[in-house]
Image (tube, rainbow, N blue to C red; front, side, top):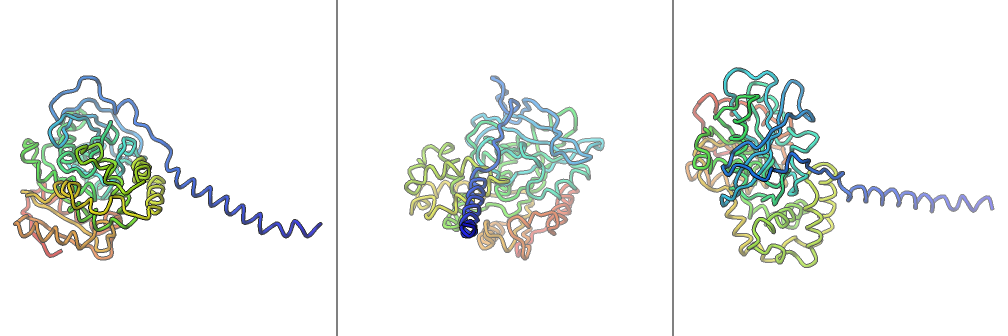
Length: 402
């Protein structure tokens, strides 16, 4: 009778380990606690019809860096075809701004998700996106940073994920709205920065700024590992977990943004609920772990074979930022990036340089998609120096070799 309990120890231990693993799996798949945008993000019944108008603002305290001040904005914008919309944004400024209008760094943020609770302004660290260390230094040196959440993040959707014109409008209209703040004097000289999805947004900003917001003086565009060829991105990663996650975001977002595409009908059979699950998760914190865990369980691609050869693929090409940008462009790329593949970026650079764009292409050895914009990346100093040169009116140099 004394030996029987000892024989049960391995079995009990196995059950306990299995229970812990199951609990861990449940914890992962549960994602982060639900965040709900408060009433600030809901516009009043009547708002200005003109894009770029400030609806309301309030000071921010959570996540604001020491010695700096910040505001949350609600403002008007327009989607790609000019339909009025409302978006939110943040403004980060020196604690004691210098006299006169401050030069603007307009930030296009990277992928955070496609539902309202995924807005960067709702995050614990709302100013850490992309080259966050460089942005902090820029603001401390006398600039003001304006970051749009984009339509559908914070505010009601849909969020048009990787839809170029809508993203560019949101970036430019956030700067326009910030100029109505009374607490800080926001100038008209702008350099746009963006990482990943944000790189895509600011390349489109460079393409459209002169016509859409001629009162703003866009001096340059700095794009870090930008999503520059959407069709190649979707096609090249379609069998990888990260590619399935991005594909699910595209499917979930574009189902609402482009109803004519009938995206749901182009999903792999039975994958509708899986796509819904992923699109409800943000690309931050525990959510992104849950999203990737779900994506790894997808044995097949998100879209049916041949889907990218039809109208869906054409719409991806139409939203790739391959138009003319009349201002200097800095394009930074890590050569170890598993998401925005270096060979795809090299083709984009070669095509733009052949068209005569003033493009400074810099490839960073050993850096991947995230380490490229880390605080200790050489890009931090490079983008600050390049940005100051634009505000100083120095001539830009084209360097297409990487």
